[in-house]
Length: 258
Picture 1 (spheres, one colour):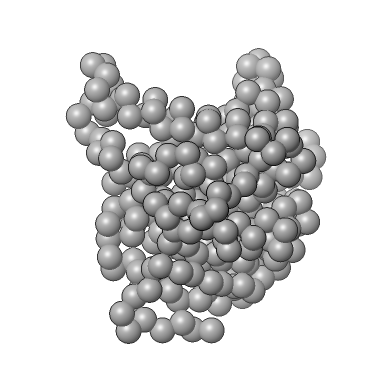
Picture 2 (picture 1 turned 90 degrees about the vertical axis):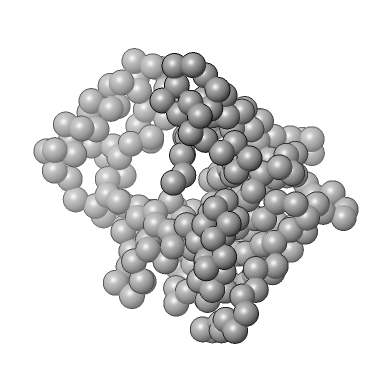
């Protein structure tokens, strides 16, 4: 199995990709420590040689920076990546020449993303990656699309229904966020008082449910778990893709459905 760890950064609205990269690598180091910590439920149960990181938006740029900083990572997933070019160059994503070839990178994005346009970020990042790589651009997808295993958009999230159960659960969670002085108190969970309810992972009727999550899991199976059977899935262009390209993951006799 795979042990997953989620993190936050000190200043979610202002932290650069470089800060997020460091946070990801620090978290990876902390998780490795659980393998040896005496009271840890994970003591002796982790293969600390198999590690990967994932990031969203500016964190997607940070995840790619982590790949450049730590060549021992098995792979990286960048969701709707933003290179952070509004930050000073030492804090944004830039690629050395020639780029390293050690850490495979998967990029998931939406072709209607106005916050981190794929033509400005995702595709240039893909082209500058020297390792095995894949980019999956979802037709009609926006900045929120990669957040759910089946896709979805901000509009679909806003159209989600509200229930008393959802209200109670989220009020409790939001109160906890405020008590912790979390600046994302009304964003880290669906807001029961506004327009941001609903599952961002809800797929459109014509979209095969799980297409995005399926590619992401296949990526982890291949590079994190050394499951070679995943190659045949990764080279197939999903039906909901407006753009799809890969390099270094070719499978014998596999055919692209495009």
